Amino acid sequence: MAKKRGNALEEHEKRKLNKQNLGKLKGIFRFVWPYRANFFWGMLFLLMSSLTLLTFPFVAGKLIDTASGKEWLLNDINSIALVLLGILLVQSVFSFFRVWLFAKVSESSMRDIRTALYAKLVQLPMTFFDKRRTGELISRITSDVSLLQDTFSVTLAELFRQIITLLAGVGFLIVTTPKLTLFMLATFPVLIILAMVFGRFIRKLSKQTQDELAAANVIVEETLHSIMTVKSFTGEDYESNRYKRGLDRVVQIAMKAAGYRGAFISFIIFALFGGIVAVMWYGASLVASGEMSVGDLVSFVLYTTFIGGSIAGLGDIYGQIQKAIGSSERVLEILDEAPEASTADYQATPISGEISFQNVKFQYPTRPEVDVLKNVTFHIGAGDKVALAGHSGAGKSTIIQLLLRLYELNHGSILVDGKPLEKWNLKQLRRNIGIVPQEVLLFGGSIRENIAYAKPGASDEEIIAAAKKANAWQFISKFPEGLDTKVGERGVKLSGGQRQRVAIARAILKDPAILVLDEATSSLDAESEALVQEALDKLMKDRTTIIIAHRLATIRKVDRIYVLKEGEIVEQGSHDTLAKKSEGFYANLVRLQFADT
Figure 1 (cartoon, rainbow, N blue to C red):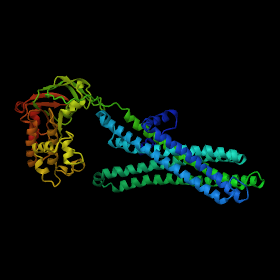
Figure 2 (cartoon, rainbow, N blue to C red):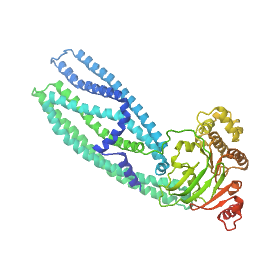
Figure 3 (cartoon, one colour):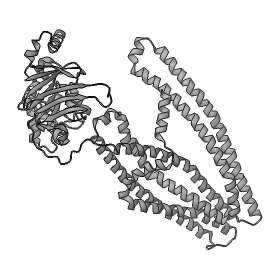
Figure 4 (cartoon, one colour):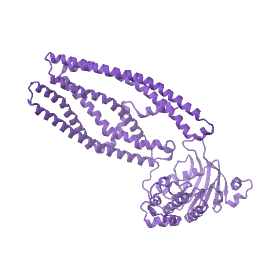
């Protein structure tokens, strides 16, 4: 399993450099286009920097020739040495502006990509998030974009620089030392091809080593996640031996790879240095016969060093571009996703809160074979207080998700104030629905930020008034930092009751026409429950309220209870009416629950 996962990851990371895949990388260039002027100047400085540096070997050769008594434009070795320093200085200036301009382009364009990616992510429908892991999505906005940033700031510049060095260097050598250059070109390509073939074989063995190591790491992961089971079954020795067998396979393949790698390195040292010896021998022969000066030979050696470095660098650049194509594909995949229904033309129009479900059928897109709701029909008048009761998985939460239009209906219709749900502006609809969940997850900022999330820009007076109505001000005012108190990641610095009251204050500030309570007091102690319940009673006043009931004792005062079983409404009525049905489903739920208590 680990091998397959490793192979899939490798395949996902890199893409072949063909026309189709390069087109995917091209899609990212639309974010670079606004900064094309800086990109153009960066390319110009890159060209000037590369060509300036390529004059260095030529002038260095002339320095040797001048020292040997040959004449040139400058016959003073001190002057030529100053020219060499001048070349390095000018090249350094060009390099600085090249780096700075490419960094400006990459930082700005990657900021735009991250902004567009995040803006698109938060606008995507729930079906998108149901099919993907959170870690994968975070990786796309961090790792993938960072790789693209490296590509635009470093890799592309290096690619063009190496190509310029390679082409200009070979061209200059052909003009100045044609015989020695042709001899070199006939020798080195064969060695390079052999090295590439050999290197690919070794990379394959290295990959097998990584796959086996991944398989061994899966054993560790499984053991640590199930450490209670391992200890209860006294499986410590078994797991240790299983892990050792996995590591033995890693060592076996790694040693095989090490043997081939040692042979490969020996071959490279012998072949390449042998090739260099052959070229130097031929060059020395040309110098001895007078067909070439010592300075020209020095220039040739320096140019060959530059060219060799360019060829070696192109291999790494090729791999980086392959990865960049994979990253651009994953980023564009999100950017091309269809968002939820438009929230444009939003108007803060108040609604009364009348809700009607008519013959609603629904299956989650990730489980199309399971009917979660089956012909659900009910009506809630404006200001009514109703409860949804039933076992877990009966469809209670799904009804709320459909009301929020987190998922699109498969069949039937939902009306709010007599208007079909799909006709509502999505932002307007959700602004009029407030939710107090059972498990409150606050944002990691201050209490003020968490309450004001319902109404950005709310004044301190409005926030404090909402906190007082939610019975939250009594503990907020005792904190040294008051509203500026940090709640910690997911609100961990507050107790359960405090988190609930902050969530209620947020709902009060939102002032929704429709209120959804997911049994907000089920996990609280008696004192906290009394305070939260008092706040909820204030919040429910004059609002359409839907309570998802876990504890039936908390819904005795609602106007109507809808009892769900396997996606269908099997009973409806008040608590007293339903509880009196001796054979009724709700009455049985009451007996079971109160028998447990």
